[in-house]
Length: 91
Image (cartoon, rainbow, N blue to C red; front, top):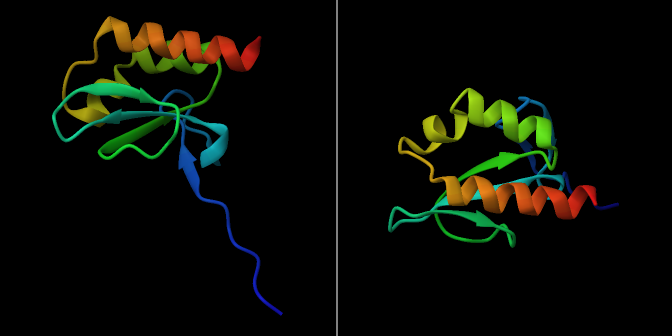
């Protein structure tokens, strides 16, 4: 009998909780150096994940966890896109 596949697990940059990859929103730093919200989860580059909750985004912003994950500053535009994406999940 074949084994069941394990779902990939990632940690939220906001709350630090481990969740399945498909439950999280991915932010990626591309090889060109731009930081983008990756709705497909397949773009090349360094990824960070965040729960689709406003509280997690606030924690990540206050503690500068995304800046630390990418070793570079994250623009306000990225945070705006993230909050819009979270609104889709909540609303």
